[in-house]
Length: 347
Ligand code: LMR
Image 1 (cartoon, rainbow, N blue to C red):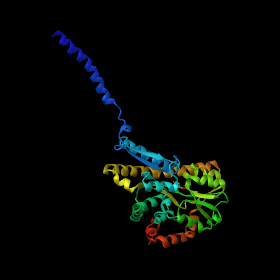
Image 2 (cartoon, protein in one colour):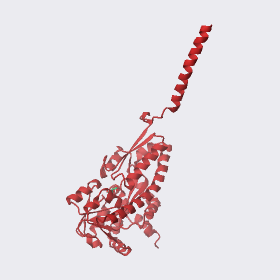
Image 3 (cartoon, rainbow, N blue to C red):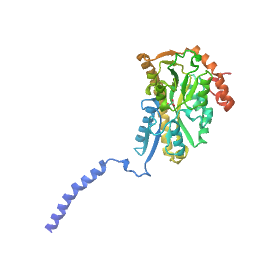
Image 4 (spheres, helix red, strand yellow):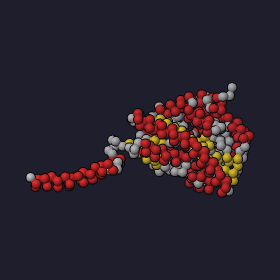
């Protein structure tokens, strides 16, 4: 009897610390979501072509971080910047094929697919970024976004790069006539090509990630872009003249492959939509601040000659570009132009 009490006591003393240790380990054991099965985890590949320290690059990272945090690591957005995964046109094809799930291309680069979107490319279409945002949220803007659905794409947000400026190596551009004869890089958009035909320049559609090399080799003599893109890719180091013209908008649609989007649960769709909305507000401010900062840096470095178009000169340029609006109307009708904020309130 005494022996069996001893055995019970011995087992008790041995088991208690073991149980305590086991329980505490279960409690503190880290949740390793990497160990979730393929079915449980959601991996989204997000490809874009610009640098990390640009309004798009920074917003992409923030979006990925927030989604990871809010889904407790279940959803991972893998961001591929600088065109390392796919270049300009390739990324759209990859999204359409479903090889990747998310991209944020410049709207200009969607105009081969949905030409009506080139209303965003019209010179001086918008007086401010607020006007761009208002138009995008309007009925006309929603109709434009719906056109993308016919191509199995869904646009869930708008991020700004900002307004474009003109740089070149030939002469200061103070008047639109100064653009005559200059070989200018543009994005893949016919309206942008028309804009340069009107001033007798030679537009060339070139992939963003080869602009630097093309400028260096002399294949092109000038280009138009936002200041964050001009500086992050060092274009200005190869150019003598910069004109602050603010003549055109550059922004991005956040595009999901529609089949993929529809395969998501309601909860996940809500998570993406709400987070994107929050990041968008933050991104708009960031784009404005970064462009201002880059302008200040360029002014201080005195490494490029800068000309600022006055408000009067901008009006003259806008008038001179009227045939580009006619070109758009002839091809795609006047509905979207009529609904630009600058015309909407004019009686
Ligand atoms: C460009 O090609 O100039 C831009 O679209 C790059 C970008 O994505 O901002």
